[in-house]
Image (cartoon, rainbow, N blue to C red; front, top):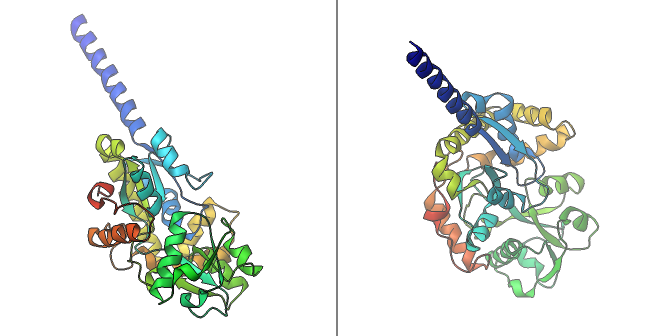
Length: 315
């Protein structure tokens, strides 16, 4: 009897230990790429409505402190998943960081040239000033847009303005600037209705997914079940946004009460079609991604086309 009792107690302890480890494994941290805006609505909605818990995971969402936070936090193990600009993913992989995109938040580029009302086309920037942040992807967006409109990018006067596209355009320090149409473009149109917006995929760039959820290869291989649960929870959240975008705005405001409803509503109206444009939410279309990889190298963001098969995988 004593032996049986000891065996039973030992079994309970082992099971309790396994349960504790399992609970710990089912907690996940996701770091955003940028200040919360409408493109993140499905993430906050998934947490608010318990989509993460329904999938058996507790998701914590963190805001970034800097644009490169996602890559650093993934590599250091302080985040399980991160929303990355697809160009940052490509550059990290070029530097030998084995990160993998597992879900697309949008199905088209968010990059654009925003221009003064007098600039009728990217081609009209010949001899004019165009602001860029200094990132390689900005030069690619400028070059691709000008060339796609039949102009010569070498004849555009580039000015490094950092992340001040809105201020620089409103102050007329530049004639155009690279920016994201879903955030800066919305803000500029509100403050200067005649502003021009030239989306990069309207001028020769392929329809690549601008933002992807990424993990390390190690996380994907060792905790695939966790990654799968998180991506399913996010898909639930974004499916809800697609059906009811006003609820998506409300979910975001509940998590971030300091944001303005009117600004978020305008952002949502702009970005909503991009969640499923040309495909289903979250899908990683390798044909599109191969076209993106060729474009990435052609316009100098990376030295060679990224290896799509290695850089992206469904969990």
